[in-house]
Length: 125
Length: 334
Image (cartoon, rainbow over all chains, first blue to last red; front, side):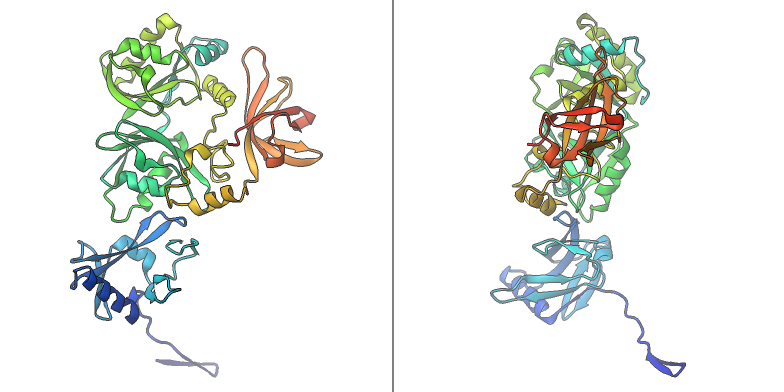
């Protein structure tokens, strides 16, 4: 869609609803970890809980099925289950994987996080 | 049942009873939250400073609910019962604490119920408080450890008795259904009569609280202060792992970055020193008075306040309003 106003041309893309996504690398590591844990068909629970230095801590867990009222998101062939309250604090997050010797493991790039603690596992909004 | 006990004792009698005998105090205004669910203790442990996971049923401890800046939201007394936690809050914070816990509950099995108005909390305070309870029931109140609690019959009233030492001297909170408050009050006064029990007003309790250096919410406790400034390091576990505000509190402690300290103060009774009064040294502000009272009898002014760390040593002379000489008599630095 385009719009012309006072000689300027702007392009407005339809806004995508905020969601939670996982990078291909991270999805691959989840699948690998699930297979090693003897749960090759498991999906990933992504959530938040109170605590951690900054107020809220990220939660990752391998689960077989969603809970009632969970949001179910499918990305790169992996199902993510998110409870509705956690979703409020995670909308827009991209779950990535940082590997190698200096890697941090799973990393939450969360646009809602205003502060994070030193170790990066907790955040404040 | 939040109304203050009627008393015919003079303030000096009440003070004497609280310090060396036994006094009855109505503490029903404190918040009482019943917290149920298998994740209740874990959640509170993640939100506050003390090692709550160590608590066995029948035991309790105080813990500081902290913000992510390491500031004090409230100091809670957590009593672990068989099937729930009973959390005592400051009078002004019961709704805030309930909402705080609710905000941080995601998928956990935790349910918070405010039982403040359903219950009464009468308290016996003073060195002889345990004797009154021992004479009334088969329990041995005197043998209770701090924050240990039991259920017992007191007269016709079934009540929970918890040792909380809330003035800094032996003290027991007795929690019963609100409908039994009057009966419980009469029973406790009758049982305490041989020991000269007095019914103490909040003013009388406040004087002893200040004398004993016990900080109170809205005065020494609140989001202007952190637990280390308030002398509450004894309620902070540095080994339990993460809780909200932990990084800040640990850094302040490790690098000795605490800037001000809670101290006890004394001044001549003729001086007009009130809570909120600035304290000066060499023309510069050194601190502020947070609580002030006069001792019955002598009229000596006593108080609590925050002063800069350099002025927190006992014996430091400060200047109050109108040039009043205010002396630091002790610091709660640990």
